[in-house]
Image 1 (cartoon, rainbow, N blue to C red):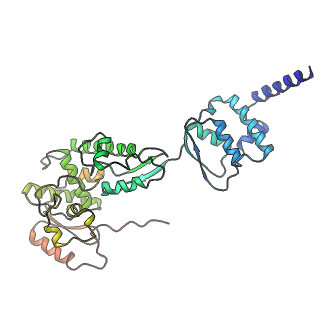
Image 2 (cartoon, rainbow, N blue to C red; image 1 turned 180 degrees about the vertical axis):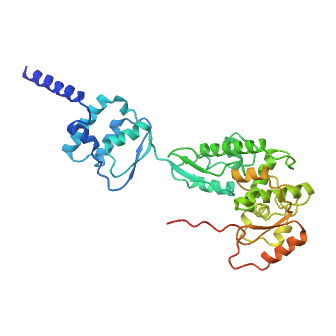
Image 3 (cartoon, rainbow, N blue to C red; image 1 turned 90 degrees about the vertical axis):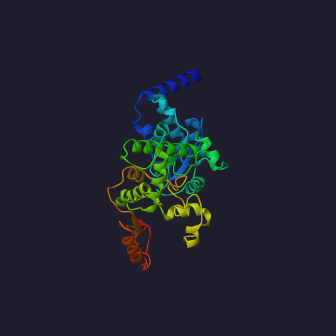
Length: 356
């Protein structure tokens, strides 16, 4: 009889406390007390995990305090879940525990699915070979394409027979631990296709491109020729006029792409004379594929070139170019900027300073 009375009394206490708001007394305080963290640390929640398993792991790692405090926390948590049963529904993934975070804040993050977002940035003008290297070293990204050739990779992206160069939009892409590299590439491919479609739909009249793909090829050349935003439409205009007049493009970045791994930072006369499908000193018209990943600005500039009448340009050495209309003026500009180079000569813009 006495034992039954104690059980009933205990149940009455539980029901009474459960009816109280969480903020009352030590119940709320136990869940709002910051976890003993000196620095941030990751928390991996496997798929199918329950909140109780997460709490047990925190306890095992010493993050729920000593025995007495831990019992108080667990008691408070049970009552909290009676009041807020949906809080027990958590999302799998990687989370970040930070100093000052309480158990209540962590549960809210698990409930919302505030998983850690990683970022991977692909810059304009990079090549698909560069992209594959970045993907292979990306922390937490599942390597589903690592064993695939370029052709097999494009088939996996439902673009069989298509060369990968140029087809992925340079940008910063966010992902979570365990995401597939193919999923990231699929997003970049869809974005580049949309950018190209939009720019093609609003292109200027009279351009010498038979298809959006030819425009993508040219955009990659424009991207590689200059990093100065104000010059892109002028560079595009030079190449448009050259194509329209049947002149060869004669652009060094295509030669470099055709050299592949042999390129060591210099182009020699023999390289300019060597025939490759990408050597625009030797072939007429466009190379067979893009030579890099053009950004949105280069694509738009290619399909909306300026009205400039120049047929030639030469790097000044500071990343910008000197544009000229005649071969005589071009040769003078070459002598001025190329044959008498400054010690700090650059054919591309100087890298931006990064604040510490």
